Length: 154
Length: 230
Image (cartoon, rainbow over the protein chains, first blue to last red):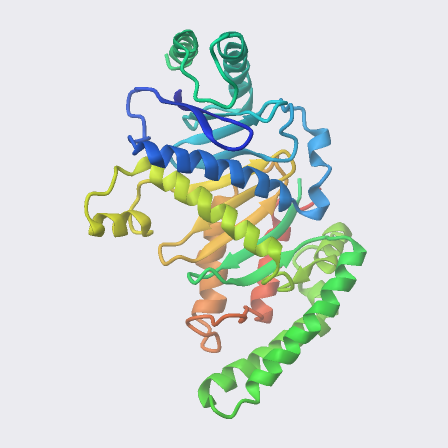
């Protein structure tokens, strides 16, 4: 189940945020300011998480077979009692953050992420009226995202 | 699989116990030289004639503390396992040398903000100041942070209701170790710190758990779980 999708720019500002209505989603509605705060704290913590790597662990990512384009050492997954957060960073520094239910694992996340990234490229970046680093308001992207979420939420 | 470090923070956000396992040889040299001034400072505290009762506690701590660093040979024999690899990891590590450095503070800050995000997303917007206070306290049961991970390591987190935080940093492939942290709190921390009359109820800034039995029990616990050896 996908509960929400956030997209942040490479400087940490929130470009896109959407909560999906699902059965017993634990995520409650917040004030619009709070979403900005959450997105930018995740951006900061992502960078700090790579700083606090134990000295013995710095080469672990080379053995990892998980999907990671430019997210080799940063924060990747946060598990809480109610939901999980997956963060992935594209090569240009845009972060796609997924709030999902606890049963979603890395492989299922990879499938969802691939689709969402593809739609982001096709319907946001190829939109001639979209300016980089600006909030995303593209209704085609909204529709495609809804289809990804609908497929994963059955 | 490996366990890299173990941390305890009290409710005033001070790191009261830190333990590293199996860092490289150069690290150990630095660690031992850093631990010397700490012992001196605690001895200096015990000479303070102003505080009678606490000084007794602290001086007994400082003797315990020095016995920890000198009796490393004894630690070797009392460990439950005879696996040389485990012995090496325990010997090479350091106890309470990182409590106040950047690593400890960054780790705490990361966990603090992640916990805040996790809780705030599951709470409705607060209407009154009372509600607000309840939402930020540990008394509610809206959501709890369990762990976070990067491709290099995984960090498990457990917070008790009175604000004590237990953190363990492991290999990213490790299973969820929150139950182990609960176990450590309920059996090792309770028995050796809470029920120990020589331990303070509130740790002051710079005070750490230097109890020999506690250190040994923690080492035994972590070395007995299958994740400990790579």
